[in-house]
Amino acid sequence: MTATTSRELPHPDLSEVELPAVLFALSDPARLDLVRALGAEGQLTVAQCQATGGDVPKSTFSHHLKTLREAGLIRNEPSGRQRTVTLRRAEVDERFPGLLDAVLGEVFLPG
Amino acid sequence: MTATTSRELPHPDLSEVELPAVLFALSDPARLDLVRALGAEGQLTVAQCQATGGDVPKSTFSHHLKTLREAGLIRNEPSGRQRTVTLRRAEVDERFPGLLDAVLGEVFLPG
Image (tube, rainbow over all chains, first blue to last red; front, side, top):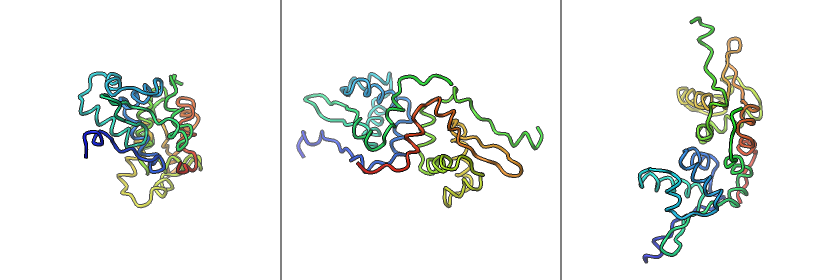
């Protein structure tokens, strides 16, 4: 394995992803904030992603990215010397219609 | 406290419930199945709820009901000698528009 291929991470096909795993990935406030930031920006570098979470340990942040990636919510891909993180919006919308719209809704006002 | 009032369980106002807690409550397959059954039936007895989950220990089932109740998703109330469980559909829809529609959607076909 070359240095280049080792930077490639596995991304599941959305057809292999079950709803409970997606809901679990979104059930952590820091991961939800990150998904919302990606929903607003479309794509962020890993460094920018980390900034959305405030002051969390790097290992915690890496775990969040892994959980979101394994749930099919994001792509985490090499881009030159950096890595970019992208929300898999269209694919998730096709698999779970309406879910991201509901979750990314800007503000939920108290009833 | 009388025997009657001790059967009353606390139910949060939906305005106090945050989205991550709701997503977490729905992220377990057994709890998701139960919410879907309640979405289809509207109301079930506790015994009927337990039947939806198959052969799980009673303590596990009780924990599932508690998690769903504390997330504002269900009411668990005494009804004569039984207890009835109701999905708080209208209240959840008002607080988190579109969420239950997405989660209760009958079938998610592979993309």
